[in-house]
Length: 375
Image (tube, rainbow, N blue to C red; front, side, top):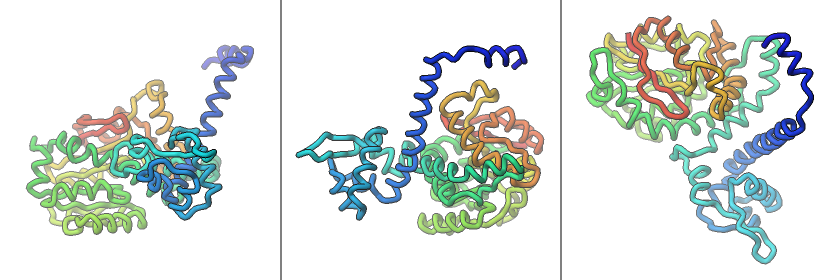
């Protein structure tokens, strides 16, 4: 923006309609932010789950079902009804009744549904809890590591991404991949391959693949000890411990495939942009691959130009990136800070610098882009 343009904007008279619209938008955002916390409260107390099979309930009935205090439940129900997350059914003998529609039940109680929303609200509220730490990182530099955030960030991330992975990973994303020999990666996994899941977090993606391809061996790596503990528990509860292993290891130094010969597939699920040195991580990955091995890089969907990301999804991802992803990268060596809206062009440049000459998009959703990386 030129100096002349800046002066023109600064000296223009305030348009009351534009100002009122801005204030109205802010009021809506105030309610959205506060109700995000109420969603987490409702999930934590089991309020949604208790409503799911109860039909129409009063606040007293819901409080009795959940062992909570009626007055607080009454206010929560009113706030949720005003938001549209529960349904107000009117009064019966002067007492308000509430219920969940089938759509509301799907969004707030069905953890296996791609429409399940609670994990996203956990991410939002956990990220917001770090506002003072993030402000300090703005001033002093040095970033803010994932491990320095509230524990709900880890649980919420897993709950938010797992349904989408369950809907797309095995049936769409993996079948879109081919290795350096032109063989479908799914064929390799069915016969028995070696797969690494780098930055695996709580292991949701690793477990999904291990269940689908029992003849293959899966290794999940993450720098965060508590996440690896959660991943091991997930593997045990899903009966995939025979063909999975989890270990604490940074992306730039994760160990070789257990049976030698290199990994047939290395996966990065929504994590490369969080890394301080994504080029170094991918360079190490290239060294760990089998000769015809392939990398599946899953990243948040984004256009290459800022102007094309100024939409609701971009708004969400830029906000999370400001509070979590960019500071996380800055807290590590190199601190490249790709951000959650890097775009395919920037991701391709990073992969090329790491030694992958073939990069192509093979799949995608409104929230993710899936890239195939080969030598």
